[in-house]
Image (cartoon, rainbow, N blue to C red; front, side, top):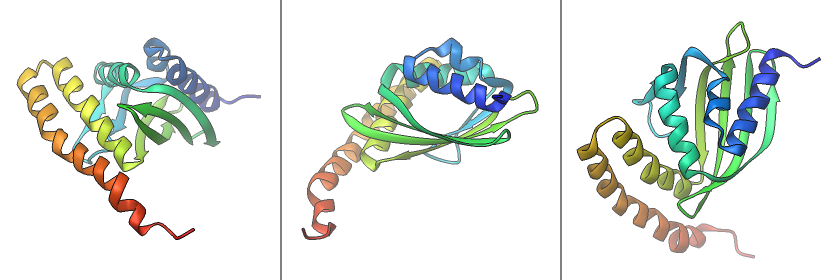
Length: 166
């Protein structure tokens, strides 16, 4: 028999793979918290903030495919691969469930570094715009460009210098 948390995690995965914001929203408790993979200074709390975040995510992530789901009725880890802004990304999410089997807390972990910076490049300005902060959106869009160029260049040219010789 499938437990409530396992069924919720399955709906969460299906929502991510299909881009279904309403299905995703059905998996969260009303006061759920999502912790940003970028900084401990940002978290999204409550369904209104989560709806904006998930809407942004589903707008920018392409080809989401979950490949791992492990855990129990209190805590599960789900992992997917996708592309964002032309970069590969893999995200592991630690899901913690309330007594009804809804997601009470989600903590996101993202790799690769180029993928994480592409996520910052796309998500930051879009979330700021949706929060009615157009000036902040423009500032974020400009501020991340040098970082993205530096990370892309480093990933392409510098990182291979440290790779094992074949």
